[in-house]
Image 1: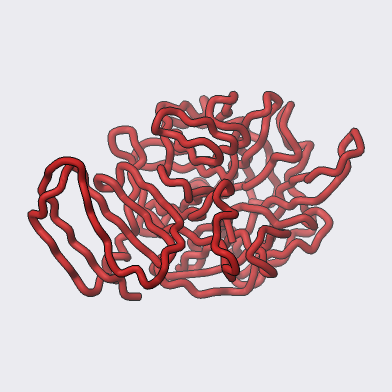
Image 2: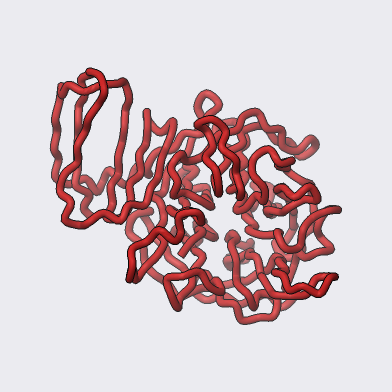
Length: 379
Protein backbone atom coordinates (compact mmCIF):
# COMPACT_ATOMS: atom_id res chain seq x y z
CA UNK A 1 0.00 0.00 0.00
CA UNK A 2 1.09 3.59 -0.51
CA UNK A 3 -0.60 7.00 -0.94
CA UNK A 4 -3.71 7.82 1.13
CA UNK A 5 -6.64 8.72 -1.12
CA UNK A 6 -10.13 10.11 -0.63
CA UNK A 7 -9.55 11.03 3.03
CA UNK A 8 -12.95 12.52 3.88
CA UNK A 9 -16.11 12.33 5.95
CA UNK A 10 -19.17 10.67 4.46
CA UNK A 11 -22.43 9.97 6.30
CA UNK A 12 -20.87 10.62 9.69
CA UNK A 13 -17.84 8.37 9.24
CA UNK A 14 -14.26 9.04 8.14
CA UNK A 15 -13.31 7.16 4.98
CA UNK A 16 -9.75 6.47 3.94
CA UNK A 17 -8.93 4.97 0.57
CA UNK A 18 -5.37 4.11 -0.35
CA UNK A 19 -3.17 2.99 -3.21
CA UNK A 20 -3.17 -0.77 -3.07
CA UNK A 21 -1.78 -3.76 -4.96
CA UNK A 22 -3.81 -6.72 -3.71
CA UNK A 23 -1.67 -9.47 -5.22
CA UNK A 24 1.78 -8.86 -3.74
CA UNK A 25 3.81 -6.65 -1.43
CA UNK A 26 5.39 -4.96 -4.47
CA UNK A 27 4.08 -2.05 -6.51
CA UNK A 28 1.79 -3.13 -9.34
CA UNK A 29 -1.33 -2.01 -11.23
CA UNK A 30 -2.85 0.07 -8.47
CA UNK A 31 -6.30 -0.39 -6.94
CA UNK A 32 -8.04 1.64 -4.25
CA UNK A 33 -8.23 -0.11 -0.89
CA UNK A 34 -10.85 1.21 1.51
CA UNK A 35 -11.20 1.70 5.28
CA UNK A 36 -13.52 3.67 7.54
CA UNK A 37 -13.40 4.80 11.17
CA UNK A 38 -15.28 6.84 13.74
CA UNK A 39 -12.30 7.75 15.93
CA UNK A 40 -9.24 7.84 13.58
CA UNK A 41 -7.71 4.93 15.50
CA UNK A 42 -9.83 1.81 14.99
CA UNK A 43 -10.40 1.04 11.32
CA UNK A 44 -12.88 -1.23 9.56
CA UNK A 45 -11.79 -2.78 6.29
CA UNK A 46 -14.21 -2.45 3.37
CA UNK A 47 -14.10 -4.00 -0.12
CA UNK A 48 -11.65 -2.46 -2.57
CA UNK A 49 -13.35 0.52 -4.19
CA UNK A 50 -11.55 0.73 -7.56
CA UNK A 51 -9.73 -1.70 -9.82
CA UNK A 52 -8.02 -1.02 -13.18
CA UNK A 53 -10.62 -2.58 -15.49
CA UNK A 54 -11.25 0.05 -18.20
CA UNK A 55 -9.16 1.17 -21.14
CA UNK A 56 -8.54 4.62 -19.61
CA UNK A 57 -7.24 3.13 -16.30
CA UNK A 58 -5.89 -0.22 -17.51
CA UNK A 59 -2.41 0.54 -16.11
CA UNK A 60 -3.71 1.65 -12.72
CA UNK A 61 -6.17 3.69 -10.68
CA UNK A 62 -3.79 6.28 -9.24
CA UNK A 63 -4.34 8.71 -6.37
CA UNK A 64 -7.23 11.10 -5.90
CA UNK A 65 -9.88 12.45 -3.56
CA UNK A 66 -13.49 12.00 -2.46
CA UNK A 67 -16.41 14.31 -1.79
CA UNK A 68 -20.14 14.00 -1.08
CA UNK A 69 -22.53 15.05 -3.86
CA UNK A 70 -25.70 17.08 -3.16
CA UNK A 71 -27.83 13.96 -3.73
CA UNK A 72 -26.01 12.08 -0.95
CA UNK A 73 -23.80 9.88 -3.11
CA UNK A 74 -20.03 9.80 -2.72
CA UNK A 75 -17.85 10.87 -5.65
CA UNK A 76 -14.33 9.53 -6.16
CA UNK A 77 -12.05 11.59 -8.41
CA UNK A 78 -8.91 9.68 -9.41
CA UNK A 79 -6.17 9.47 -12.00
CA UNK A 80 -6.64 6.78 -14.62
CA UNK A 81 -3.43 5.57 -16.28
CA UNK A 82 -3.15 3.75 -19.61
CA UNK A 83 -0.24 2.85 -21.84
CA UNK A 84 -0.09 4.63 -25.20
CA UNK A 85 2.30 5.64 -27.95
CA UNK A 86 3.65 9.15 -28.19
CA UNK A 87 4.36 11.05 -31.42
CA UNK A 88 7.71 9.26 -31.74
CA UNK A 89 6.13 5.83 -31.35
CA UNK A 90 7.40 5.14 -27.82
CA UNK A 91 5.14 3.63 -25.18
CA UNK A 92 4.39 5.90 -22.23
CA UNK A 93 1.84 6.36 -19.46
CA UNK A 94 -1.08 8.60 -20.37
CA UNK A 95 -2.73 10.11 -17.30
CA UNK A 96 -6.28 11.47 -17.17
CA UNK A 97 -8.75 12.30 -14.40
CA UNK A 98 -11.75 10.02 -13.92
CA UNK A 99 -14.85 9.69 -11.74
CA UNK A 100 -16.59 6.91 -9.85
CA UNK A 101 -19.77 7.32 -7.80
CA UNK A 102 -21.06 5.12 -4.99
CA UNK A 103 -22.75 4.68 -1.65
CA UNK A 104 -19.75 4.34 0.67
CA UNK A 105 -19.15 0.68 -0.15
CA UNK A 106 -19.81 0.02 -3.85
CA UNK A 107 -18.70 2.34 -6.66
CA UNK A 108 -19.45 2.56 -10.38
CA UNK A 109 -17.19 4.36 -12.84
CA UNK A 110 -18.68 7.31 -14.69
CA UNK A 111 -19.80 6.59 -18.24
CA UNK A 112 -18.16 9.72 -19.67
CA UNK A 113 -14.66 9.09 -18.27
CA UNK A 114 -12.15 10.59 -18.52
CA UNK A 115 -13.50 13.95 -17.41
CA UNK A 116 -10.14 15.78 -17.69
CA UNK A 117 -7.55 14.95 -20.33
CA UNK A 118 -5.02 16.56 -22.66
CA UNK A 119 -7.46 19.17 -23.94
CA UNK A 120 -7.95 20.49 -20.40
CA UNK A 121 -4.26 21.19 -19.75
CA UNK A 122 -2.72 24.66 -19.98
CA UNK A 123 -0.15 25.21 -22.70
CA UNK A 124 2.99 23.19 -22.05
CA UNK A 125 1.30 20.85 -19.58
CA UNK A 126 2.33 17.19 -19.55
CA UNK A 127 -0.06 14.30 -20.25
CA UNK A 128 2.32 11.78 -18.65
CA UNK A 129 2.64 13.74 -15.39
CA UNK A 130 -0.95 14.84 -14.73
CA UNK A 131 -2.23 13.20 -11.57
CA UNK A 132 -3.52 13.03 -7.99
CA UNK A 133 -6.63 15.24 -7.91
CA UNK A 134 -7.73 16.40 -4.45
CA UNK A 135 -11.39 17.46 -4.50
CA UNK A 136 -13.56 19.48 -2.12
CA UNK A 137 -16.80 21.46 -2.10
CA UNK A 138 -16.75 25.10 -1.02
CA UNK A 139 -19.45 26.54 1.29
CA UNK A 140 -21.03 28.15 -1.80
CA UNK A 141 -21.62 24.66 -3.24
CA UNK A 142 -19.02 24.83 -6.02
CA UNK A 143 -16.62 21.90 -6.39
CA UNK A 144 -12.89 22.44 -6.81
CA UNK A 145 -9.93 20.18 -7.38
CA UNK A 146 -6.17 20.66 -7.47
CA UNK A 147 -4.05 18.36 -9.67
CA UNK A 148 -0.30 17.87 -9.96
CA UNK A 149 1.33 18.49 -13.35
CA UNK A 150 4.73 18.90 -14.98
CA UNK A 151 5.29 22.06 -16.99
CA UNK A 152 7.35 22.83 -20.08
CA UNK A 153 10.44 23.68 -17.99
CA UNK A 154 10.46 20.12 -16.62
CA UNK A 155 9.37 21.02 -13.09
CA UNK A 156 6.07 20.84 -11.23
CA UNK A 157 2.93 22.90 -10.99
CA UNK A 158 -0.44 22.65 -9.28
CA UNK A 159 -3.51 23.17 -11.48
CA UNK A 160 -6.95 24.20 -10.21
CA UNK A 161 -10.28 23.19 -11.79
CA UNK A 162 -13.88 23.92 -10.82
CA UNK A 163 -17.28 22.31 -11.35
CA UNK A 164 -20.86 23.25 -10.58
CA UNK A 165 -22.13 19.66 -10.30
CA UNK A 166 -18.92 17.64 -9.68
CA UNK A 167 -19.25 15.99 -13.10
CA UNK A 168 -18.22 18.59 -15.69
CA UNK A 169 -15.01 20.47 -14.97
CA UNK A 170 -13.22 23.55 -16.30
CA UNK A 171 -9.70 24.89 -15.84
CA UNK A 172 -9.38 27.86 -13.48
CA UNK A 173 -5.67 28.64 -13.14
CA UNK A 174 -2.20 27.41 -12.37
CA UNK A 175 -2.27 27.76 -8.60
CA UNK A 176 1.51 27.68 -8.09
CA UNK A 177 4.55 26.42 -9.98
CA UNK A 178 7.94 25.09 -8.99
CA UNK A 179 10.18 26.74 -11.60
CA UNK A 180 12.82 24.19 -10.58
CA UNK A 181 13.03 25.70 -7.09
CA UNK A 182 11.66 22.81 -5.03
CA UNK A 183 12.26 19.53 -6.83
CA UNK A 184 10.66 18.54 -10.11
CA UNK A 185 7.21 16.97 -10.51
CA UNK A 186 4.80 18.06 -7.76
CA UNK A 187 2.62 15.11 -6.72
CA UNK A 188 -0.35 14.67 -4.37
CA UNK A 189 -1.41 18.30 -3.82
CA UNK A 190 -3.88 19.55 -1.21
CA UNK A 191 -5.17 23.10 -0.73
CA UNK A 192 -7.11 24.35 2.28
CA UNK A 193 -7.69 27.31 4.63
CA UNK A 194 -6.26 27.06 8.14
CA UNK A 195 -6.20 29.61 10.95
CA UNK A 196 -6.72 32.56 8.64
CA UNK A 197 -4.09 31.45 6.14
CA UNK A 198 -4.16 29.36 2.97
CA UNK A 199 -2.05 26.20 2.86
CA UNK A 200 -0.81 24.37 -0.22
CA UNK A 201 0.93 21.05 0.37
CA UNK A 202 2.55 18.79 -2.20
CA UNK A 203 5.16 16.05 -2.54
CA UNK A 204 7.98 17.05 -4.91
CA UNK A 205 10.12 14.48 -6.66
CA UNK A 206 13.87 14.89 -7.15
CA UNK A 207 14.35 17.41 -4.35
CA UNK A 208 17.75 18.91 -3.71
CA UNK A 209 18.74 19.48 -0.07
CA UNK A 210 18.29 23.00 1.26
CA UNK A 211 20.23 23.34 4.51
CA UNK A 212 18.46 21.30 7.15
CA UNK A 213 14.98 22.11 5.82
CA UNK A 214 14.67 19.78 2.82
CA UNK A 215 16.38 16.44 2.29
CA UNK A 216 17.38 15.07 -1.11
CA UNK A 217 15.09 12.81 -3.13
CA UNK A 218 11.33 12.57 -2.75
CA UNK A 219 10.17 15.05 -0.12
CA UNK A 220 7.27 17.13 1.10
CA UNK A 221 6.56 20.83 0.82
CA UNK A 222 4.18 23.14 2.68
CA UNK A 223 3.54 26.59 1.21
CA UNK A 224 1.64 29.03 3.42
CA UNK A 225 0.17 32.21 2.01
CA UNK A 226 -2.99 33.96 0.92
CA UNK A 227 -5.64 33.18 -1.70
CA UNK A 228 -8.35 35.15 -3.42
CA UNK A 229 -10.45 34.13 -6.43
CA UNK A 230 -9.22 37.21 -8.31
CA UNK A 231 -5.50 37.12 -7.55
CA UNK A 232 -4.99 33.43 -6.90
CA UNK A 233 -2.48 32.04 -4.39
CA UNK A 234 0.44 34.11 -3.07
CA UNK A 235 3.00 32.09 -1.14
CA UNK A 236 4.60 33.71 1.90
CA UNK A 237 6.63 30.89 3.43
CA UNK A 238 7.92 27.43 2.58
CA UNK A 239 8.80 24.53 4.86
CA UNK A 240 9.11 20.77 4.90
CA UNK A 241 6.06 18.99 6.31
CA UNK A 242 7.98 16.16 7.95
CA UNK A 243 11.72 15.95 8.64
CA UNK A 244 12.03 12.17 8.59
CA UNK A 245 12.71 10.07 5.52
CA UNK A 246 9.52 8.03 5.69
CA UNK A 247 6.70 10.47 4.99
CA UNK A 248 5.07 11.13 1.61
CA UNK A 249 1.82 12.01 -0.18
CA UNK A 250 -0.06 13.54 2.79
CA UNK A 251 -3.76 14.28 2.45
CA UNK A 252 -6.09 16.23 4.74
CA UNK A 253 -9.76 16.43 5.59
CA UNK A 254 -12.00 18.95 7.32
CA UNK A 255 -13.58 17.17 10.30
CA UNK A 256 -17.15 18.03 11.36
CA UNK A 257 -15.80 19.53 14.61
CA UNK A 258 -13.67 22.03 12.67
CA UNK A 259 -10.31 20.30 12.90
CA UNK A 260 -8.05 19.93 9.86
CA UNK A 261 -6.59 16.42 10.04
CA UNK A 262 -3.78 14.98 7.93
CA UNK A 263 -2.56 11.46 7.23
CA UNK A 264 0.35 10.32 5.06
CA UNK A 265 2.08 7.25 3.67
CA UNK A 266 4.78 6.42 6.22
CA UNK A 267 7.34 5.41 3.63
CA UNK A 268 9.29 6.96 0.78
CA UNK A 269 10.03 5.72 -2.73
CA UNK A 270 13.73 6.13 -1.97
CA UNK A 271 13.45 3.69 0.96
CA UNK A 272 10.85 1.36 -0.56
CA UNK A 273 13.31 -1.51 -1.07
CA UNK A 274 14.61 -1.37 2.51
CA UNK A 275 12.38 -4.06 3.94
CA UNK A 276 13.28 -7.39 5.52
CA UNK A 277 13.50 -10.52 3.41
CA UNK A 278 10.24 -12.51 3.29
CA UNK A 279 8.22 -9.58 4.66
CA UNK A 280 4.59 -10.41 3.84
CA UNK A 281 3.36 -6.82 3.98
CA UNK A 282 4.64 -3.44 2.86
CA UNK A 283 3.53 0.10 3.56
CA UNK A 284 1.74 1.80 6.44
CA UNK A 285 0.10 5.11 7.30
CA UNK A 286 1.14 7.72 9.84
CA UNK A 287 -1.03 8.51 12.79
CA UNK A 288 -3.65 11.08 11.80
CA UNK A 289 -2.44 14.54 12.86
CA UNK A 290 -4.27 17.71 13.83
CA UNK A 291 -2.96 20.77 11.99
CA UNK A 292 -2.71 24.44 12.89
CA UNK A 293 -0.70 27.46 11.81
CA UNK A 294 1.28 29.41 14.42
CA UNK A 295 3.80 32.15 13.72
CA UNK A 296 3.70 31.35 10.02
CA UNK A 297 4.55 27.65 10.46
CA UNK A 298 2.55 24.47 10.10
CA UNK A 299 2.05 22.77 13.48
CA UNK A 300 1.20 19.06 13.76
CA UNK A 301 0.12 16.95 16.71
CA UNK A 302 -1.41 13.46 17.01
CA UNK A 303 -5.20 13.43 16.98
CA UNK A 304 -6.51 14.00 20.50
CA UNK A 305 -8.38 10.68 20.37
CA UNK A 306 -5.04 8.93 20.95
CA UNK A 307 -5.00 10.13 24.56
CA UNK A 308 -8.07 8.00 25.30
CA UNK A 309 -5.95 4.92 24.55
CA UNK A 310 -3.39 5.57 27.26
CA UNK A 311 -2.91 2.61 29.57
CA UNK A 312 -0.17 1.89 32.09
CA UNK A 313 1.72 5.09 33.04
CA UNK A 314 5.40 5.36 33.90
CA UNK A 315 6.89 8.68 35.08
CA UNK A 316 10.51 9.70 35.73
CA UNK A 317 11.18 13.27 36.90
CA UNK A 318 14.24 15.45 37.42
CA UNK A 319 16.57 13.14 35.50
CA UNK A 320 19.85 14.89 34.57
CA UNK A 321 20.67 14.94 30.79
CA UNK A 322 21.32 17.78 28.28
CA UNK A 323 19.61 20.31 25.94
CA UNK A 324 16.27 22.13 26.03
CA UNK A 325 13.63 20.40 23.96
CA UNK A 326 10.19 18.82 24.29
CA UNK A 327 9.64 15.50 22.53
CA UNK A 328 6.54 13.38 22.12
CA UNK A 329 7.57 9.99 20.74
CA UNK A 330 4.98 7.50 19.48
CA UNK A 331 6.45 4.05 18.93
CA UNK A 332 4.58 1.35 17.03
CA UNK A 333 5.76 -2.12 16.08
CA UNK A 334 7.59 -0.96 12.96
CA UNK A 335 7.57 2.83 13.12
CA UNK A 336 8.35 5.88 15.20
CA UNK A 337 6.90 9.40 14.96
CA UNK A 338 8.60 12.21 16.90
CA UNK A 339 6.75 15.47 17.60
CA UNK A 340 9.11 18.27 18.64
CA UNK A 341 8.15 21.26 20.82
CA UNK A 342 4.38 20.75 20.65
CA UNK A 343 4.40 19.91 16.95
CA UNK A 344 6.69 22.62 15.53
CA UNK A 345 8.57 19.85 13.73
CA UNK A 346 7.80 16.19 13.14
CA UNK A 347 9.97 13.28 11.97
CA UNK A 348 8.59 9.91 10.85
CA UNK A 349 10.60 6.75 10.32
CA UNK A 350 9.96 3.12 9.54
CA UNK A 351 12.02 0.83 11.78
CA UNK A 352 11.87 -2.94 11.43
CA UNK A 353 12.69 -3.45 15.10
CA UNK A 354 12.86 -6.89 16.66
CA UNK A 355 9.66 -7.29 18.63
CA UNK A 356 11.69 -8.52 21.60
CA UNK A 357 13.22 -5.06 22.08
CA UNK A 358 12.17 -3.96 25.57
CA UNK A 359 13.87 -0.67 26.45
CA UNK A 360 14.12 2.99 25.47
CA UNK A 361 17.25 4.92 26.45
CA UNK A 362 18.08 8.63 26.61
CA UNK A 363 21.48 10.24 26.47
CA UNK A 364 22.86 13.73 26.01
CA UNK A 365 26.17 15.47 25.42
CA UNK A 366 25.72 18.09 28.14
CA UNK A 367 23.61 18.48 31.24
CA UNK A 368 19.92 19.20 31.76
CA UNK A 369 17.01 17.99 33.85
CA UNK A 370 14.25 16.06 32.10
CA UNK A 371 10.88 14.55 32.93
CA UNK A 372 9.86 11.35 31.17
CA UNK A 373 6.25 10.22 30.98
CA UNK A 374 5.41 6.95 29.21
CA UNK A 375 2.07 5.30 28.41
CA UNK A 376 1.21 1.96 26.91
CA UNK A 377 -1.38 2.43 24.15
CA UNK A 378 -4.36 0.11 24.44
CA UNK A 379 -6.81 -0.24 21.52
